[in-house]
Length: 452
Image (cartoon, rainbow, N blue to C red):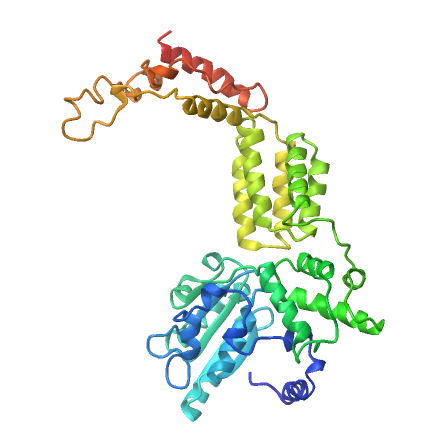
């Protein structure tokens, strides 16, 4: 699996003429200090720092991590980190993709690594991209090499490794989670690409509105933002312009700049319109606003949080499945990221918009909070107080408490609320959807509690 003559020739040509490589490749960091974002993984003493710097001549050393699994969304630097580690340690670097490679290729790499280590004392870094695409048997083939340190495995995945990577391999590797790049991270990357000799060498400027659009369409993906910048820069140079205008960016990436400022009024206006459309059961309008947020590069976690709030605020017990649906969507979004997260957010938005509506959960806690803040609290009834400590009985605590499971129907007629709010009714159910059943239940329960 060493590079063949054609691959070696291509790499040599790229070294002599860097402009023949894509901008994202040319701007690939050469050291860990040039890596954008992922500060939590690059602190002094971190596993990646030790992997690069520990041991004679670099490398993990006896106490360093032998293999690493990098988990994160696309464009966050998984391949870059593997490349930097290999360059910094001057190890033999072999790259495989789980899309095209199989057990045969893995075994060939392992055999080559053993020969290189035995004959030349040179260690091998095996970078395996998209390891989640390997079957269990294919992942099993990596175990001997990882366990015996014949290779330093750096595996990359966009899917949750607890579900997609076999336990024996996971337990023998260090799992590092990469985060989506922030706008500040990407701004720094754009500035470097515009000025650096490996990039555009200061030949073009980038106005604020064009930069903002590039950030929106990037969605936290470094590769995407550099690819879009390169396309726009090429178009600007062809037109003889000295700056990359918003119009040029729009033309080259075939995508209109949506009027949407994630830190300004549009952010809140569109988010508000999404929730109000769901509340009003207009599924089409809700999907429109969702699409605007997605297309503008809104953080999918922000959208998912708003949907979870909506599920309780506007639907509640009228559809008890609404909140679990929204929570499941938020969990899925955190695992998969864009672009697939758009499907999950659409799923949840449609379900919430078409669900029966009730705001009784909102009004109930609002009324209860209003009473508490008005001073209507008072002492907890003595029979409800904690009786699990010495002397509680002498104080009358927990005395006379009726255990509901000991009575027919498991509802004991006794006072639960403090005297100040005894008899208050905070929850007033509607007759919409599944809440109609709760409306009947709550009246029967209240009657039993009063002893009627």
